[in-house]
Amino acid sequence: MSSSGKAIIVDLGPLRQSVEDRVQSGSYASTDDVIRAGLLALEREEAGINEWLTRLAESALADPRPSIPAEQVFHDLRAKHVRPAHKLEW
Image (tube, rainbow, N blue to C red; front, side):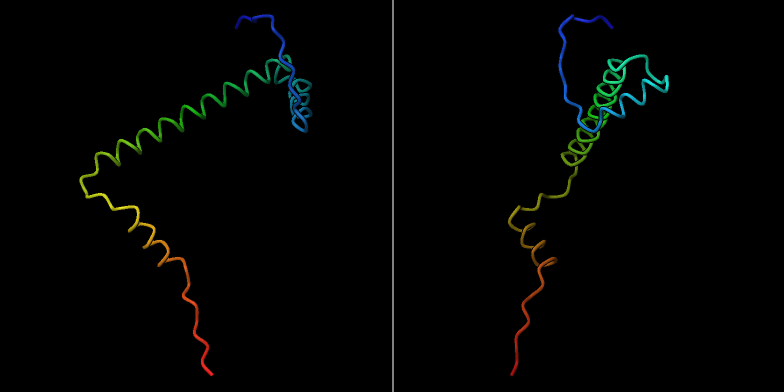
């Protein structure tokens, strides 16, 4: 991977120790390598989430069942999750 020569300064906060530990253990050659690996892992995770969301959307669009109006969905959710107020009887 070539470097553009432009430095980016990042405050890692408490994550700094984690980066330093990985370099000291020999798992990574430098802090740059740790940060690159972290960003590549983030890209893989985001790609996986995007693929999952795409499949979910395609599945929903292909579902032949009729759509339920949002008003009905919210009504049903409220009926399921909101407890009715109890009447006080004297």
